[in-house]
Structures are given as structure tokens and as C-alpha cells.
Image (spheres, rainbow, N blue to C red):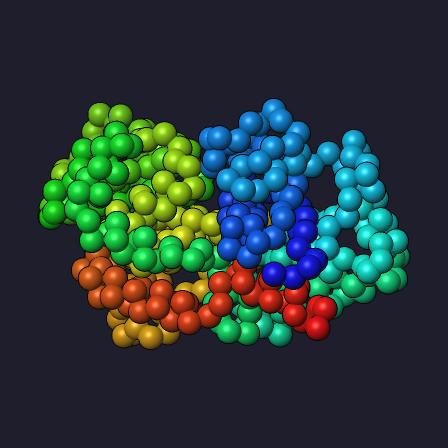
Length: 381
């Protein structure tokens, strides 16, 4: 372990659960698996309390699962008294507080300073990964931009040690799966059922999906944790004219992070959003449909297309078209009924391709390991 082992991680909540989810998973990995002392500075602890119920949303300082969590109140914190970390990691373009930066400039040696960017499959990410950016006002300081990604020329994805072993044990244990379903208030689905988890933003064609599932030839279990998707599910259930077919719909309470992983593992098809659940669906190695965080300038469409290009590259043309068509319909909010049959007919083949995709991702270093290697060996090497 490096002698310089104190990390400060800064996170401002923009995409609600995704930002806090990624920042906490990363902080926990740095502490648990790499022996770092980590302080996670968050500006909204109510979000973390949903993901980790042991969090006290009213506390200014506490430990949550091995991570020192601090309320980010830039105007109220005397950074020199708090101490400057050896490695400063700002997430998703949030700016480290200027008084803290000023203290960094005075520190000897200067802290290593990293900006963790949003995840993208776009080609330019590989060329921009790890590039330095000298600070224009505090000349001694240089910030490096670190990009998560899907290739060996990026920082990789968050993946805890033993995650896939736990997944495989869970998926091969019928008793564990049935106990999980009961623990969240869901009757265990029969073996022939299609189990669907539903998590998304406003604007997705929830009614189109549910109507399509109501015409599925076998039983369908749809499970939506508390949020936009569960509200849409409840509204669909309440329609007097809605044809339910074999659909059993469950709107359940919000699940903590680690329990949500189990929902993804237990389901046959996962609708996910943002960044954190998007990555976790890939580790689940089940067919999934992604809704990126909508942006006014349509930048999310570029991200969607870039990922689809990589994810479907090894698929037969017809299978790739089925995936692309359904994802496009889900994100446009129209055309889902037309796109669903082609996707549904190829789910088993898409499931195989998704497992292969997961295996390829595992050949790259995980994000926490890549960050530690960069901070401890590259920046001080």
C-alpha cells in the first residue's frame, strides 16, 4: 500500500441516484480493496440514505460501510483544519471547492488531482483519457481527466472483487432466488415466467412495454422499484380497459444498492437508466435495455448510439438490428410495439451475446484498480 493513502472524493448530485451510487461504490472499493482512507464529500445525503439505509441523512460526518461520509458544505468547512488528502478525486465535472484548491497549491508535495468523467463509449474518450490540464490560477497544480470505459485504453468499469462469483452462486441457487423474491414482497415466478425489472426516467413508453408484455405467450413478472417506473406500472394496472394477459405487476419499495444487484441477477430482462444501474446490468449478464440520462442537446443519443455500436458489434446483423430497434424505441418513446416482437424472439441469442460481452469487459482492469494504479504509480512514478 502506498504511504500516501488518503483520498478525498467529491460528488454533487445531478442524476439523483446514479451520481451518488457511482461515487459510493468507488469510495467503498478504494477503502475495502485497496486500503485507502476515503472521505466522500456529498452535497445531498438523503440520496445516499436511499441507497444505503444505514446512512444518517442529518449527520455531517459518519462512517458508512467503511467509508467516511461527510456533508459537503463548502462555505462552512475550514479545509486546512480538515486536512488535504494525498489524492483528490472530483466526480462528474464537479469543481473542488476553491479554498480547498488553494490549500492544495500550498501543500508539499501537491496532492494528485483527478477528475473522474461520466461513462461513455464514444471513440474520443480513449484519446482524452488521463490527459493533464494545468490549473489556470494555481499554477503548480495539474488536474488529470480520467474516463471510465469499455476498452483497455480507458479506466474500465466499477467491478468489486468477487462480484461475478457471487452473481453466479446466486443465479445457480434456486432457493436463494426464491428467498430473494419473497424478501421484496414478490411471489417467486415459476420457471417458465419472463421476469422483467423496470427502472427508468420519465418519457419512456411504459404503457407500450406493458401492453406488449400482456400479449406474451407465457406468464410475465414485472417488478419496478419505487420511482417513475413504479408509478407508471401502478397507473397501467389501474386502467379499467388495460389488457393484463399473463402479467403479474409488482411496484416495490426502493432497493438498496446491493439488493438491487440481486434483482438484476434474478430477472431475465432488465430495463435500466443512467450510469450505475447501466453498468450493473452488464455485470448481471442478462439482456437489458438502457435509457441514458436525457439531455436537452441530445448528447444522450450520441452516447446511446456509441454504446450500441460496441455492444452489438459481435452480433449477427438481424440480432443487432433487433437490439438497436428496441433501444431506439424505448428512448424515443414511440414504436415500441413494433420493435418488441423481433427482440423478444431473439432473447435467448441476445442473452448469450450479453454474457460474452460481460466476459470481454472482465479482461480489463476495474475502475478502482485503474485509478489506484494511475494515482500511485503513474502520477508519482
